[in-house]
Image (cartoon, helix red, strand yellow):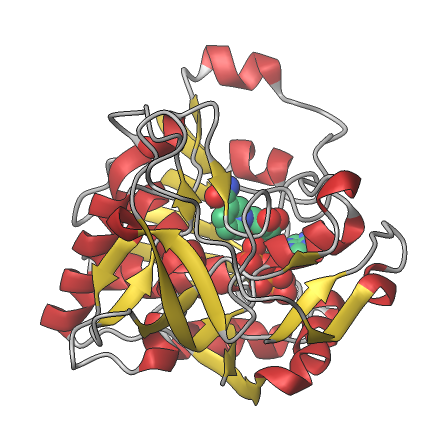
Length: 330
Ligand SMILES: NC(=O)c1ccc[n+]([C@@H]2O[C@H](COP(=O)([O-])OP(=O)(O)OC[C@H]3O[C@@H](n4cnc5c(N)ncnc54)[C@H](OP(=O)(O)O)[C@@H]3O)[C@@H](O)[C@H]2O)c1
C-alpha cells in the first residue's frame, strides 16, 4: 500500500530518511495470541495530520533504529471495517493495563512500535476508535488525536484551568500552540501568547488571543498558568511570568530540554507548580470531539496536501513555516 515512512534516522538532516513509497499492509495482531490481546481492526485513512513528533522520529528521537522502516504519523480519521467514520486514538496501551493509558509505562504512540497513519490503512485496537460526528470533516478530525488532545489535557486536566483565569501560551504558530489558544479562548480563559514572529502574533489575535507579546518580553501582569511546549528558549520566561502559586504545564521542548537556569529559588519561594502532560486518554479525546461538535470550534488548518506531497509539509514544519495544522489527505 501507499505509505510515507522513515527508512533511517538523522538528527541533523531528518528529511534525508523520509520516503514516500510503498509498504506492506499493516499486520493485525491475532486476538487469540498474547496476554488478552485486545481485538484489533483496520481503518482506511481518509486524512491524517503532521506533528512535530514525526520530525523527532526522523531525527531518531523516540524511534528505535531496529524498528525501521516505520510508517510515520500518529493522527488519522477514516472509515473502519464496518463502514463507520472514526478518529483513531494514537496512544496504544498494553492490553493488561487499566486506567489512564498515558500513565502505562508500556504504552506507545502509533509510529513508535506499531506502524503509523501516513498510509492507505492503519491497524489499531478496536477500543482506540472514537466515533467522528458528521459536523467534523475528516481533515478537521485528523487534527485532534495528538496536538489538540495534548492541548485539551494541558489546559483542562493537568492545568485544571477554569473560566476567568489567565493563561500564557508560549509560541503561536505550532499545532499544539494554535490548539491551546483556540481551546483556552473557548473555555473562557484570558489568553496571552508569545511568538518570535510579528505576523504570527497578529494571527494569534485573530484566532482568540486577548494579548500578544514578543518571545521573552516582560508581561504587564503575572498569569495563573503557562502552557509550555517550546522548552529551553522560553522556560525561564515561563517561570518569571507566573503569579505566586501559579502552574506551568509542559508537554514539549522543541528548542531543547536543558534550559540554562532552572530558577529553583523562584519555584520554591513562589510555590510554583511544574506539571508534565503527555497526550491524553481515549475518554478525553471523546470529550474534545464532543466539545467541538457542540461549540463549532474547529482546528486551524495551515494547509492540506495530498499524502504523496508529504515531504513539502515536513519541510515547512522543519523551517517553522507553519500556522496551525498540516493535513495530509488520501
Ligand atoms: N507530550 C506530548 O504528548 C506532546 C504532544 C504533542 C506535541 N508535543 C511536543 O510539543 C512540541 C510542539 O509540537 P507541535 O506539533 O505543535 O510542533 P510545531 O507545530 O512545529 O510547533 C512549534 C512551536 O514551537 C515554537 N518555537 C519553536 N522554537 C522556538 C523558539 N526558539 N523560541 C520560541 N518559540 C519557539 C513555535 O512558535 P512560533 O513559531 O510562533 O514562535 C511553535 O509554536 C514538540 O516538541 C512536540 O514534540 C508533545
